[in-house]
Structure formats: structure tokens, C-alpha cells
Image 1 (tube, one colour):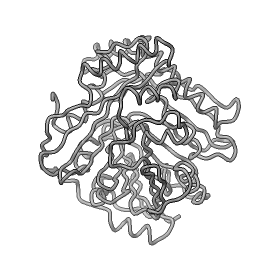
Image 2: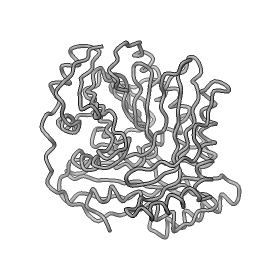
Image 3: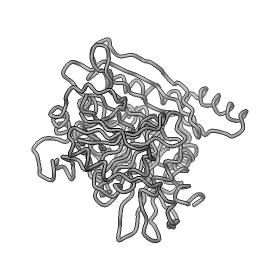
Length: 454
């Protein structure tokens, strides 16, 4: 592995010239994140894997395997021991996203409407060189499997600060659900829960808008990145990009003393932060005492434990936290942490396949909840509620849940932005409160687009 330190510059500045490159990726926590850690930049993949309309392709050529199997084979072929000690969690390997609809590849009974977006159902690049930014130490490096890949990336990196873009105007936002329709959807789900169809389902709406004139998705991401999300990401695809402001880790894989440990961190339960300390403490106490929120979280923790049991060694699964408070600058969450040791011979790609989609964005039991989601929403989710992340050539991995995202698509020279938002419905849910929770989750994206109050 080749490693070369480069002059420090903002990861956003470094990525700006590459943002329109297909498969270009930037994994970048918000500027106000509790622990910004490392930012990872990748472009010019040596190979790419896509899944579109039921067809898996490698470099544009169809292959006979499913998407998850193809991803696993690509990882196994690249995997190797590396003795470098840079400290970056990712150096070279696979980066990309999995769309929600790919859950039907492993669970055909849960098949729903196709994605309505231009993005593929899965897209991963195999990157032989990356730029890694240690934001705590303010040091930057280019890392590569060979000198040619390293030089190509280094020469393409930007140096100048990202300039403030001209303001882009957007049309008033609209949703595929009216307030009353969403209330009725929640009430219908509660009825199904009462009838014993499932215990919980995550219902969503899709808020969309279109620019009045031309727009730049990366300029929007740069504004989004001023926030506090720990799992921010920008991933370009042909004709658009995914802009993620995710607060939630799906799972990570890291070395354990006896193998590899998979750790999942489902979030269920949300309250806003308040500027007034007394009001903030009241909201925390309300969240911690909420029977509805805790029940939601515990159900998803149980589902996650069940998913992990399919790929982890017997008696290795640990409940590290259940319904623990996690507070960021803008929002409070309840998070559970469940981990297990991967069975011998399995990889992070196997973990992705076994656990996808994340239970916190489906419900429980997972298959029955997904069936209900398809019937009620009547529209595919695309990248929303999928997964964004990486599998490093050394074997470790980290994926976030693709929530709090914007899906940007170029349409006739203008920019269409979709903001999908949702929440978990249980027997104790209140339809009005569930609708308001979706608006709370959309607020940051709406503010970034200048659409607050529409």
C-alpha cells in the first residue's frame, strides 16, 4: 500500500472538482458532529457494480449472479492483509449504496413497487486509491494500491475553498401524501397491528421540489454538511446524486480478538433539542419515559438480534445498550447497540445481505412490515431506507441507514430534489404526532433548500 501525506485542505474543497464524476463518493460527517473523525474521498473506480431493473452488471456487462453475491465476490477477490497504520477506517475497497428495493432479492415475499428514481438499486465502486482526511489532527493523505491510481486521484483533488454558490430557487414543496392521507395511513397501520398482522411498521412520505433554474447537488450538500450528522455522504450516480445527512449507523464490522465483530446501532425515538436548558431536560425526560418510543426501540433491538443470529457465532451476541440516550446538537434519540462475532468464513458482505434492509426502517416482523409498507405507500423508496457505506479491502466495514437523505436528479436541465421522511408506527401511535414527526425530520433539508414553511 502506498501512502503519501498531502497539504491539508477541506474535504469539501478537495472533492468539489470530482462531484460530477460517476461513482465519486465523499463520506463526511457534518461540521457540528460530536466526533467528525475521518472524511473519505474516492473517485475513478477500477471497476463498478450496479443493479438495475433486476440485472446485475459489472462495468456495464451483465453477470449471472445476484447483487449481494456479486458484491461479496468482488470483496473476497480484493481482500488482503495490509500492515499500514494510517488510522483511517477505510483505505481502499468498495464504497457505495444499496437501495431499499434490493431487500426483495433475499426476501421475495416482501417485494413491492419498483424504485421511481433514476438511481440504480445498488451501486458500488471498487477504489484502488482514496484521499483520507483526519479532521481532528487536520492532516490529509492519499492512499493507493499502486502509484498510478494514487497519482491520478491526487492530481484531481481541489485545493481552493468551496465558494458560496449563487442562490438556487425552488418551487413550493409537495408530497405524495396530504396530511389527511398520511393520518389515514397511520390509522390503517394501527388497525393492522391491532388485528395481529405485525407489531410495528415504518411509514414514509416523499416530499419533492424542482429548481426554478439550474442547480448543483454538491453545493446543496456543502450546506447540508454544516450540520451535525455523523454519517454524511455524497454519492454521485449517472444523472444525479444521493445527499445523506444520516444520524444512524446500520452496522459496522471491525477486528475482534477472535475474529470480526458486527455491531448494529438501531435508532428509534426522537425529540428535538431546545435552546433552553430546562426545556431540553424536560424533552429528554419525556423521551426516556415514553412507553411508545421505548417499545418501538426494544422491538427493533429484538429484530436486530435475530438478524445477527443468522451470521454470528452462538453465544457471542451482546446487548451493549438498550434504549440509551444519544444527543446531538439538534436532536435527541434513543439508540440500542447489539453486537456479535461473525461466523468463520463470513465477511462484511454476508452481514450486509443477512441484515438488509435495516429493521429500524421496516418494522417487526420485518417481512410482514415490508408487505404492509408496499400496500400502504404504493410507491418504491429507491435509495431511501437503504444503506450507504464501505467494505474495506482489509475486511472492516461501516454502513449508515439512508435516512435524512435528499435524492437529486437532473431533469431537463433543472434539479429535482426528493426528501423522503418517515417514522415507526406502533399500537400507541397518534396519527397527528406521527405526521408532525416526519415534518421535524424534513426540516433541516427544507431549510437548506430555502423552503422552510412551505
